[in-house]
Length: 604
Image (cartoon, rainbow, N blue to C red):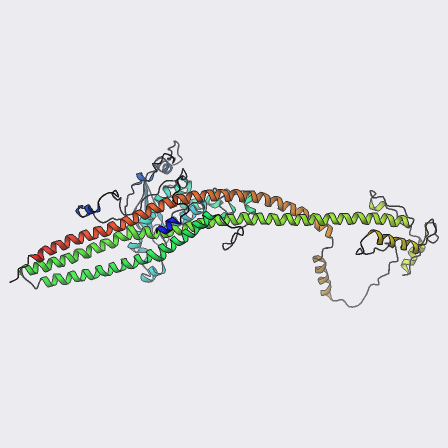
């Protein structure tokens, strides 16, 4: 255990969050001072340590002057709020646990909760929904666990009566009281309306579950602020939800990594080690107690067959065996409540700590994914803008080339600022139109009806050569040659043959996939990418802020938990020792009386 404590990165933290209060004691007894000599225990009349139905919560408020004590304010919205806020040391009790037959459904076990002068009845499923709600409201806090549900072994042992087992009901009653008082010791939970309404007899719990703030929490709490999950911002809706098995590429904070390893090792030692062995020991104690009960009966029967001092001695031995049986049963009960239950709770706490650390780890993943996604979008935008600039450069070149070709052909030069429909085109004469209609080559005419020649006497063939020469000199060889749009246009005859209907649909689908206007698509992609970058930048700011808040809150609550864990382990160990001391003291008294009777036997 010392090794675990040495590996604890938060043990020994000097400064705690001002709102954190020391948790209540759920063990068997208020122990005497450590300086008290245990040898005096045998002379005391105190019994076994048992689960303390009434907490002494006055010692759970820190005496450190640097820790802010809870303030009592005036003006409360309800009686339960006045009790919890006005009296932070007030203990919450579960005074009864019994079957409730109210409603149309079958009976269920209801637990009567008393807070000051107020009492309310809640069933186990409502305690479970309360804790689930608190974990969603406070994902960065180590919310105390509640006793687990019935196991399959319980149902196998008692198929119809598992839910009415008095042993399980008593265990739940004690641990649910521990849960409520631990929650009361945490300022954030104690002052929250959801926890207060759970203890309020005038509030319907079903309505609380279906009303804000619980109903306002997103399905994934990763898309909500870590300190106020009931009020997510629009930027949180765009945050990614990492996979539970994802790992950080850049590595995590070493303190949180060490805390996670420590919690995992602690959980294994508690649940798979000490708790399992303790269950076997208690089982063997129970078997010994049963054997002692039978042995005591045998001694008492034997004493009836003897006389005088021998009969009295045998009877006292039988009584000593009976007292040992009774004290062993009390030892089992005391160890169950003062050691086994807090031991199981401690193992549950380790699982809760790991869940909180996992939430913080996913917040770090969320920030990393958002940052990487923003970088990818910026690279994409840069590529699209580079392509757009290249396209514009090519278009400008084509415009300059077309102007040069028209001047070489003797046409009117194009005005770059003139509309497309005002650009001069060659006149189409009747002879030209007739040639096109008959499928012949269109004659090359000048504007005065003669063969098209420029002022220098060059023919159209010479012009074509000049145009190609210009292209070869001014543009890369990979540029495709563009023919004159007014050159000969071959006539395509329509076919009246058989057509396959499916071909048309396939062609339409193909044209739907192929980008027929890449420039427009590219410009739309640029605009969409810029909008996405703005969203990612806002989301990145939100994710960074969430990560800082979550890390600070988790670190502060881990420090509180580590200090509480050390106090709990100390109480557990001392309670375990005191249980055995008390058991041995009672057995010693019984066997000393038996010894005195045995020494009185007169041998004839």
